[in-house]
Image 1 (spheres, one colour):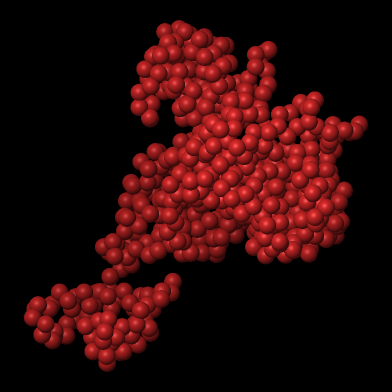
Image 2: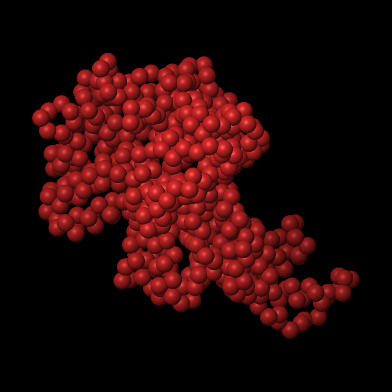
Length: 610
């Protein structure tokens, strides 16, 4: 790594002009190893000085100070959590005296893996046990035939996940097992983190970094710290996930027409005074509160005192307040089911929570909330503190931002579909969506923060065409994209694929799309309303139907974006894209898949799926 050095002279050093010139010439000619040797030599010379300022007699050359091996921190991140943790780990490594570099797996040069001595992998898991999109190539490389032998490599893995999903931390497990298979030595057992990852990661990292330091092969390492390539120290915003900003609600509008089965809200919030900024593609985190109906239902079914004091991370408070503001009661976890099984002495729940029954457990949890569990398996005499001890902290909900900050300064807009359904005749509600739709009115405040989403960005070149696929609320970031491109007078063509159920009641932001079409900001729009005809038609069907033009746009350099449902829509659109490339590009299925992968590598195919 090259560094800019300030040239020495007689004014900025105690050297004569001639000495300064000689030293400048010498330093400019040295490589990193030679500089290290000279540094050690001069340290030895200085130790021989008699303190009088007299000329020092030459001494034997000092032994070179061995440089500790660099710790490479590789992260695979979809939501930004793994990336943030990777940079935190790097700061801690530097404090330990370890040279460190931090790299997104998408940017890592795979040929360098065989040379690595110390590797820390930090990765999330996405979808059905898949690696995050930016980590896909590296994951395939490590598991493929070209992966190198790693006998000289020491490694450790932090796996991030969500225990409410079946394939919890699967990508981290994949990397951990595969690195060992390739001959690398595991320095610390894999850490598997649920959504509350900060505390366990902070406990795990110091001994792991000690182990890396022990194997770094360096001397006193505090003087051997190197900076992370390409990283600038970022000033943290005043408001973040742990300290959200109370944003005033400016508008709360229903986007659906009368008679729709959906309730989709357009919500505008003020960021005035927050100092928060964002780019199109970024995410707004919202700290919600649980509904009174769900809180009171749990307390009532268990026969508890709503005013009983419980200890939380935020101090002591009444049980009702803790359940409303601090803990998840609509999302179940394996730990909760396992603990509750013992509490109520249920063999049925014990069997469900068994490690080899994860698929059935995931299905059970996906259909129920805490109120359903305590209703099906009732108990009395439960200590309120034991109840909250089984629950995980209430997590923020995240929404794609539907506005450009340049076009709407001091504001942020989101698009929210309210989740309401029934279970055995009883109403059930989503947490944040109905909190925003039903409980929050203009003038009230909502705790929010911004999360950067570097993997979903407009092209840097404003003349680059864009193809945007977003059914339902997945259309939100494209509203931000078009606001931004209109504001910047970008010359690139824009094509939107939008889908929903009914044209008359569910065409979200219809008048805005039509205005942009008329003004030339939006060049094309193709819609798919799945309940309008005899057969259901979705956005992936429209992509195939317009395949010839889609392929032409891609060949002309267009970026391809997908936003929305990760389980069904995103895989279907992905396959449609491969089919389009195969058919209209005259390629085999394998060649078409490679074409699409190359789009991803070049960041021309980006996804924001959930």
